[in-house]
Every structure is written in structure tokens, then in C-alpha cells.
Length: 202
Ligand SMILES: Nc1nc2c(c(=O)[nH]1)N[C@H]1C(S)=C(S)[C@@H](COP(=O)(O)O)O[C@H]1N2
Ligand SMILES: [Mo]
Image (tube, rainbow, N blue to C red):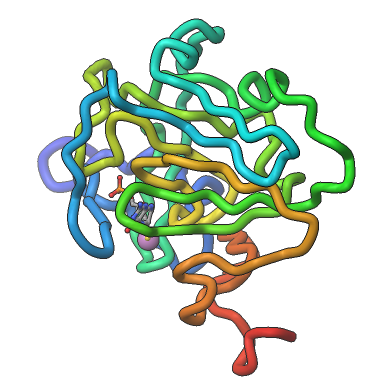
């Protein structure tokens, strides 16, 4: 009989948690290196690789449509957090401001401090990806990537770049920080794309 001795079972979340992942309590912080302390007003997003370099400022970002996003977050170190509440701007709305020639197939995200992570343009330009500046109704804390980070919910969270400072559009794939250090080039959690092959180029 439920009540005294039995916990009410959790609603079925199995279909939300990828294989080999466990639900985290709270929202862990995972950073390689130091956490930069940046002012929102000083934030810039440099656009590299196009013929004319361009940039977005904080007020440029604020002038684009603002949306609430609820997204699951899966770290390759095996914790997941469901239903994270963010607010920000769709990646597709930022990309729509650029006239991207069709020969670009890849993008490198660059972060203040030197972290990088690579994506195909197809994985980056999805409607559920966004630049987040707000977490659970508060300005995005520095340790979670504030003032602005990307969130790419369909891939492992190392693809979600904290303190994003530049997008570099590429015609050929290059590997980012963790991808060079053995992580998978794509990182799809449902396929457990955790690590690259032993040679990593294959
Ligand atoms: N700039 C930067 N972005 C980063 C990282 C980092 O070390 N530096 N870590 C990545 C990893 S491995 C994960 S799991 C998530 C963690 O985000 P959180 O600290 O907000 O939980 O950020 C990703 N983005
Ligand atoms: Mo991670």
C-alpha cells in the first residue's frame, strides 16, 4: 500500500534519460580551467570566417526575439538534468542576421579563456538551439557560462559553449578542445557517442 512504506514512484522518465546517464541533484558545474567574470555590457560575439568579419553586441542580442526554453542537459561524465529553464535567443535567429554562403558546413564555437567545441552547421542551426542569458529566471551565473552561453540540447553538454565569444564558420571540419582530446566529434547521447575512435581521425 502506498503511503507509509513506499515512495510514490517517479513519473516514468526513462524515455528522457539517455543510456548510461543518471539524474543529477541540483545543477552541477563542469568547467575546464578558470571561470571568467564578464560584464554583460562588454559581451561580444565575433563572427569569423566570412569575408567581412562582423560582431554582435549585448544590445544586438537583446534586440532579437527573446524566448523561453526548457531543455534536457546531458553531460558525458554521466549526469543529466531534465527540464532546465533558460531564456535567450534562437541560434537560427542569430544566423538569419548573417548571409551565410552555402559552402560552410561547420562551425567552431570559441569561448573566453580558450575553450572551443566544433559542430556541423546542420547540428548548430537547429531550431531548439539557443544563446542563453538567463537561467531559472536569473541572469545566467558566471559558473554556468554567463553572460551568454550556447545550449545545444540534442548533443552532450560539452557542445554547449559557456562564455561564447566567437563563431568561426568553416568549410572543413576542425576539432575543438575535448574533441581533440578524445571525445567524439559529434557527441549524440542516445547513441552514446562519448569517445572518438583510437585514432580519432576515422
Ligand atoms: N567555455 C567552456 N564551456 C563549456 C565547458 C568548459 O569547460 N568551458 N565545459 C562543457 C561541459 S563538459 C559541460 S558538461 C557543460 C557544463 O555546463 P554547466 O557547468 O553549466 O553545468 O559546459 C560545457 N561548456
Ligand atoms: Mo561535460
